[in-house]
View: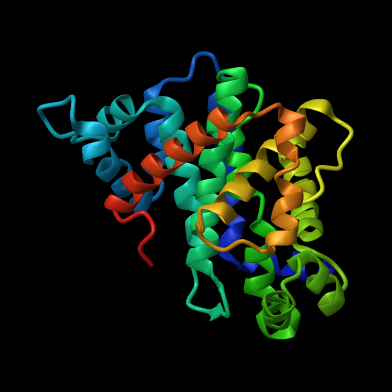
Length: 288
């Protein structure tokens, strides 16, 4: 694990902590405005282009006669929170997408799953608790499986590919096959890196415990349960790459009881998740 962590600085993941740190600073600054977010966005051409394309898509532009021509206009149209999601998603996408695929696994599939879990997390949390500045459910979903992408980039031919194939063949849990292949899991490597990068505690908890929701902090544990339901929805709706089989999906679904989610809640989240994914797909968000 130490060897893997030492390799991260050579990978695209090394850009994530600096962007996240600046994003959290802006989020927690009551005096921050659209200009601050636009300035952060301007640091990357691809992110800027994606922001403008999203703002001018059918999903966001139906109420406007003119196209958004500047990043400030785009952020106002999309909304501050949604703009933050686009910036972080764009940064994480660069780190995730490569050309390798094995059995049912591909990095574009992992990317689709991560985005969908982020959307699901936000929808569930907002429906139950409203919006909050103390944590970011979308960000937790976006980053929860970053350990898989790290293993892919640093250990593809040294056990990762075998673990992916064995999970598929055995209909097992990827963490089980990772432990056999190289002695640690994507939860553990993701948590170690999140601590190294000084991520907020709730992100560390979700990244390191999203399969079992074993954490002592009540708010973090609740977010882990939310993440588990979003993962279960992805499996049920066949969205992206899920690193588990139906047996484990059924265990994830038990978090509905912890969250007191009824059928109406699940149907609402699934419907909204589908709408948002369709909107993102229409502007090329998931093209490889």
